[in-house]
Amino acid sequence: MADAALEWTRAAAPDGTSFIRAGSGAPVLFIHGVGMNAAIWQPQIERMADRWDVIAIDMLGHGRSPLPPQVPELADYARQAIRLLDHLGLNSVSVVGHSMGALVAQELALLAPERVSRIVSLNAVFRRPPDLAEAVRERAAALTGHGDTAGAAQTIARWFGDPISAELMAAAEKTAAALGEVDPEGYARTYRLFARADSDHAERLPALAMPALFITGSEDKNSSPAMSAAMARLAPHGRCTVLGGERHMMAVAAPDFTTRHIVDFLTDGEVAAQSNGADAGASFDSGEFRRALGSFLTGVTIVTTIGPEGEPRGFTANSFTSVSLDPPLVLVCIAHKALGHPVFATAKSFAINILNESQKAASGIFASKAADKFASVDWRPGQTGSPILDGSVACFDCDTERLVDAGDHSILIGHVRDFQHNAAQPLGYCRGAYVTPGLSQEALAAAQPGTDVGAILENGGRILFLDTPDGFLELPRGRGLGSASDGKSLKGLFAAKAIEAQLGFLYAVWDDAGDVSRTHVYYRGTFDVPVSSDRGIRLIDIDAIDGLKIADPAIRSMLARYMRECTEDAFGVYVGNEVEGEVRPLARAASLITGDQG
Image (spheres, rainbow, N blue to C red):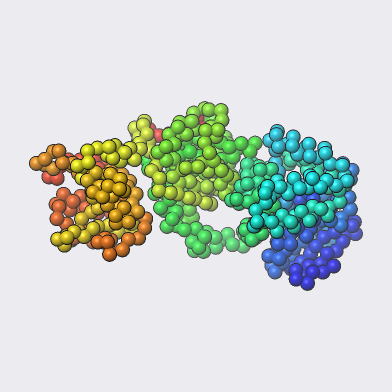
């Protein structure tokens, strides 16, 4: 049988195994899940046949292949695949399996490692939690081998949602059609095995010799990110990838997205040198990465991973730093005595979450020996499967690059796979206490309105100034911090000039020498939205500030210090009056939170 559009052929091996074959090149064997058939891989065949020899098998009891034994084992399905490879004269293939097919692919790789060069486990199950295991066993026990229309509808709802969104309707209908064609007895026998085989490889995955990708969707509750992360942790050359927003049938529902990850993994050996070189910049924005790293104060983080049983683990640390921009590397430290040290020391991946000012409680919980730390926070799986905490100022989702033993701590060096950041105020830690820079702004907002409040706002190496009526320049300032509705205040000025500003650290405080009741307070900050000169706004390069016409000598002196400290990348806080005072360096922490509890 041939399909002219796809140029595939359907054939049968001597043992009756039915399969589809298309394309040419390096061979890739696709193994579908329970209730599907070889044709479910049509999107992958279309996208890969121009470069690979794609073979899609009908599992035992599915499509046109014969039934499995009455009480089958995974080895029965794996040996079916080996017989097909023998028939086709293929010594070694890459194998991609989905759901039940992922278990078969793993079994094949463990039974005959010389026949498998790489393995991709899509939406695989592993050590189901008790409630989920019981639900699957109940569904398996209810199967009669005579078809189950209501059960099929429930399956589609689990896989695509209820109700099904319009954009998933075509994929759901295609999947439902395949489910409706399956032999009821073949489905029942295979599903009963699927219900009990989720732990079959728990002790054997450490023997998986080849590179292995465990990939699932963030919304797949039955083949969860924690399961994929746990399998990747056990496999010596395992890697976990979580596709955001995807569910169980992501190979059908999001074929471009899913296939791209499969292809990237299968060609990893060919492009590894390029991906760490100049081409990496196209997919990894080093400038944004640098700005995300800048979100770290002195700071407080929660470091997370998935443990060997698929459970989330985490500890509080402020021993965090960037290591390299190319490749993008970061590090964090964990104490040898920490309860979580064995977990993190053997993790394939981890995430670093930089906390905001409102996350003090979470910091304390994750620094303690609390039994269920994650009950106190909202989180989601990141791209590696590691937990990403909601509300963090920034987060860095990493593959473990290296573990370095250093005194009574271990240094975890991570290769950043994904990151994100925002403009929230970070939480700091100094001299045994938390530091919250936003509190000074809150206190200032309640101060007497006569306080002169201004800001040095920077964007891309340029400082924002305002024109004055007499031809001078001045920094944005107002009478008190105020609000957007108070036109005389600093925030009112921002609103009137349409300046999207974020105030950061306190930079200078002084009183007028002749009038101690008049206080001046200036902050460092940033602005996001480009501004135009038609509102009297000027953007001046930092290194060009020195000759500007600025009337106030105290402001000129402050800006001269700012230029110098930008060069040194070391900032302080000026305290005094407009004539004399001192610059006090930002305090360094005398003690560190380094995950002693873990």
